[in-house]
Length: 281
Image 1 (cartoon, rainbow, N blue to C red):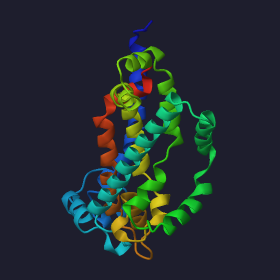
Image 2 (spheres, helix red, strand yellow):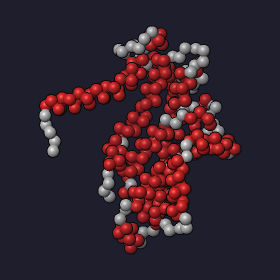
Image 3 (tube, rainbow, N blue to C red):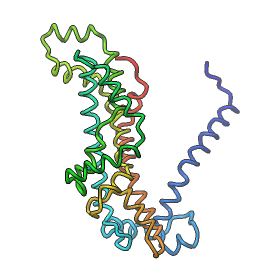
Image 4 (cartoon, one colour):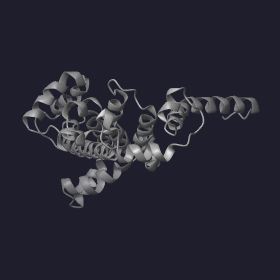
């Protein structure tokens, strides 16, 4: 039963507006700072837009911040996009195939294989990052897109989620596909993947943001500026050595870095929500 009391509605909307304001205020301050000169930002946080919007964004997109050793933001955004898309596609592909094999094929040590994958969830990143770096260095993948993305494309979480979903697919559907003459890969391609559409969308959004926000791994495997990601670029701009950080340009970079993940979430919002809450097949 839904209560319709005016006072309760006012309180609910007030709390909602307060929560939204607390969430949006830091982003608002970052945007406002990106429209002022460095001197204006350094003298105090402004709360109204300035007149340097086009100049600041044109500088970070075209020239970057050479004093901080950072290339133009356009190149770093491209590197981040390549890394995030490769990680997302790789994790989804490997997880789908491994889950399909674990659920629908009978082979020795099948359960042991799944639990071996699952146990990797409990390994902290710090435990495996140095051995992974050693392997990548020996394979000559430092300062490359392959080195940025391939070591991060295995996902025990996605494998576990797809396994749980495939186990809920009715056996009658599998039998019907077999009677109709569908082989394993045709069943996988024409039935399981379409059924997993909402799960794929939800995981894709989460994995894209995961790949986009990677900081430690790109910092280890890249020393060439042409492979810097945008998160690395923001950190290098903020640590400008003996010079004062140009916070107006740093905030402009941060605003630009937020746009691709926000666009992905908005574009896939409906499927993302359905993928998180849907239980019926």
